[in-house]
Image 1 (tube, one colour):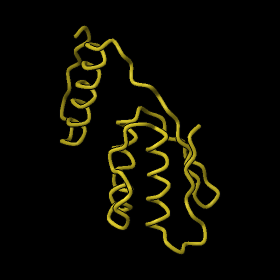
Image 2 (cartoon, rainbow, N blue to C red; image 1 turned 60 degrees about the vertical axis):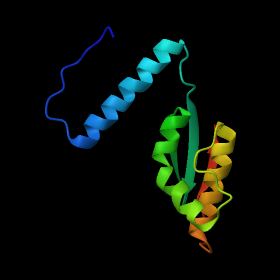
Image 3 (cartoon, rainbow, N blue to C red; image 1 turned 90 degrees about the vertical axis):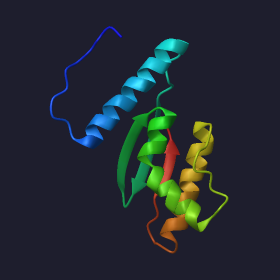
Image 4 (cartoon, rainbow, N blue to C red; image 1 turned 135 degrees about the vertical axis):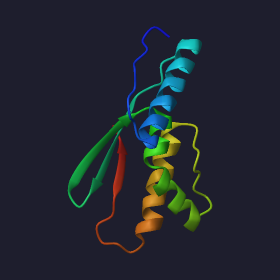
Length: 110
């Protein structure tokens, strides 16, 4: 690797996140493929949140929501292979976990 940075006093979570990033970067350099960036718009109670990243980052960001949805509905895939499948499973997870909530969360791929 060309760029090596000195890390001082990182927390365990930051250290893990850094090394996971390095492994993904190394893998992408070996295969000469860059991970495709996607943007998901999450709308809840009139507020919009944009989350940008590759599919693996999205799985880790929304992992708990997918896990909760899968605990209620076994048809929800916690490890989808495509971004369209991920968005569909994430929307199903929000629908399962929010139940009869008046203002539901909506997910949209931009």
